[in-house]
Amino acid sequence: MIQQQDFEIIIVGGSYSGLSAAMSLGRSLRQVLVIDSGLPCNRQTPHSHNFITHDGEVPAVISAKAKVQVDFYNTVQFYHGLAISCIKIKSGFEVRTESGLSFTAKKILFATGVKDLLPNIPGFAECWGISVLHCPYCHGYEVKAEKTAVIGNGEIGFEYVKMISNWTKDLKLLTNGKSDLTSAQLLILKNHGIEVIYEEIDSFIHESGNIQRITFRDQSKIDVKAVYARPPFEQHCPLPEVLGCELTEMGLLKVDMFQKTNIEGIYACGDSCIQARSVAMAVSSGSFAGASINKTLIDENFA
Image 1 (spheres, one colour):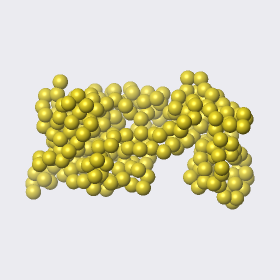
Image 2 (tube, one colour):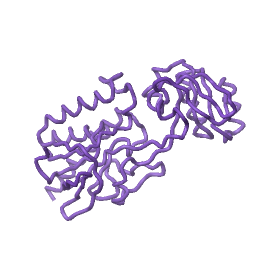
Image 3 (cartoon, one colour):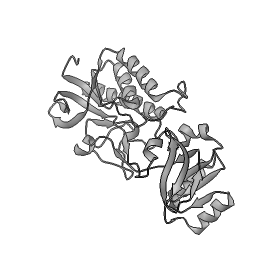
Image 4 (cartoon, rainbow, N blue to C red):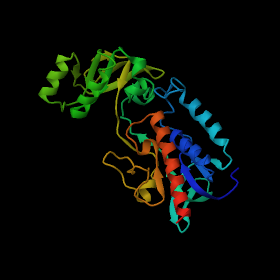
């Protein structure tokens, strides 16, 4: 049960970056409310990696442990639900939830992440985060030297498959249709033994999210153990844009070196504003955002 209606900071999003910011602010004796609907983007991923002290841990276990530790700080409260509106008021901001409750705060921190726009390929969504991967630093070691496909085209696809070749040489690049690769790029890939397949993808054959093969529209198929893909994304929460927060060309919330957006009093951290999507990066971003907000509140008190 929420014990108050007015706070110093409301954090919208209570996953890794939001919890990290909450800990930083709780340790700074700030009155904080964390609003979270419980839908982290990596909820289907079985194990998180490349996060020291938590390498190989189940993502939900990391966040559950983090919440227990943040809950130790009695100035931090949690509300499980969806924030559906946020408006500017004289004292700061008012956030309304789906249940009809509203809360106010001087500062808002969006730790809401992004939503991946998965292609309409049968089996892709079921494999996403399990055997269809986005980051080799997070998951590459676990599928090193395995039969691997990279979905990509043009300059982005070329650079992506180059990167993945560090973890496996048994590698194919799937353009999923007409190629935008240059002749020079194709020659380089050929010289490195990377086959390019141009056929459109029909489906992913898998068992409980573990991919076994990819079938193509021309009835051909390839056996694979892992696929790398970078589908487009959008902001998971529309509220920052409604408030006027600017986006980068990539669709991330635009922040300065102190995690501030272009709207006074609004901050962002985690996947919503950083390109490197990993638990470790999200935690780092959230911790710094919390410290930045605390410093701003201190400076305002001395103004």
